[in-house]
Length: 581
Ligand code: BDP
Image (tube, rainbow, N blue to C red; front, side, top):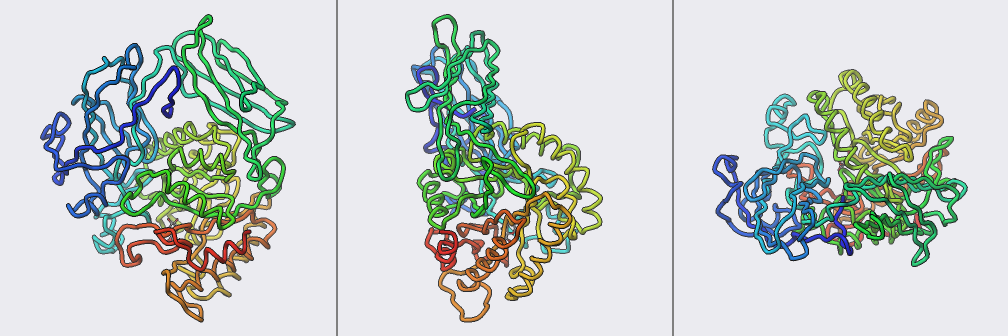
């Protein structure tokens, strides 16, 4: 559960400079780095390490990297439980406390924590982190081994650093870790479902450690709309007189949970919640009963120097650019974003398709353990984000496969069936989807059977039929019609479409990489999306140019942004703004 500061709990941010060391031979653990290592210099947290130390040869390295810092326990810690909390440690990590192993984490971009017991104020402790971005090839976000390149008949260094996905594999403590101080009798992570059906509905399950009763208050500013008490922390309300949350009016209320014993309050947590209903009905996406069209973008967490390191100013800037274009939604392609991004989306009324870190699932390598891990990551994602009104759907994976049609159709259906079934148990209030690509697996991808709406990543006019928009659009229309006939109740959503454009490159005819072609392709797709009765919208790939691993298909960045990496508009941004506003 994310850190919170109030009269009962506190949290010490662990941002700042961390001592750093490389481990090129991967023998740091053997050499006792967990207890101590000789620092080569300092790395700033939050931040990716790659660009900070590019000059020392760290840019294209996947790890392992070692980071370490000391903390002095503050005076408020007396009598409290200390919990070391990481918002994420990417892509995987092992953590030590004073040289003792606390544990490891292999879920990229998700939080995890360790309970440390009571710490004496004034004492000094050391936190050591070993980061490693070399994920195994049977991970839900699969890594790539040189044997894979050989089998695929490709040069070993065709993609460098070697990854399966099209974004730079930045390593780091990308979001500020915290040392939290919690009351010993305390609330634990609550489950909150706020819906809207004939008024507000609210279901809360608030577990606690230590006895006491749970008091729930629903506040609108200073006014308490509801106040209720439960010994077991279970609450269910209906017909609440509240305003629904929507893009036009993202009204939020404060949900306060308190743990009390007699007259004494032992703990408190607050959440800004919103009441809304999302459902798929007759091929439409309904928000509070009204049909919604999703207009927006796929994004990335990416900025020069910071890499994937969090900077709230960049978060605000990016969501403001999205709104400037007239967008109402985005997908957290291809991993869970920082929690603050969702806080901001809640406040702005933006709709979010939240995606698990899973791209190019490699069915040649998946095992039962992959599926188990994938489900565990989805569970952690849903636990973290389920209470945000902005999240309207879960995307479980992006472009699974990496196989020819026949092999895929053998390996994938069983995996998908179990994945979706397990995920649906975790959230019955939102639709589930996953994005597929092109026609790699034939017209009827077995994925579709499990999706509440179909998410299509389509690059006709770019990777297929480049510079031939008439053919591209006609083929896409045929595909929409065929899918609508096959799945009359499932909305079609174009989860990615776009073209690279190099800012400043112009052409008077259809020319790949020109700003004109990017703008034209987007406009032609949008006309099709808007005109098709079963299509609920689309997300342009991408809002902003983003850095990728090195390969001959990319000039440093993927240029499909309608803004450059420094956030300046290309022609397409203006075109989209004209279309959407
Ligand atoms: C899609 C992927 C996305 C890529 C994009 C592209 O989902 O991650 O960046 O293609 O090639 O297939 O631009």
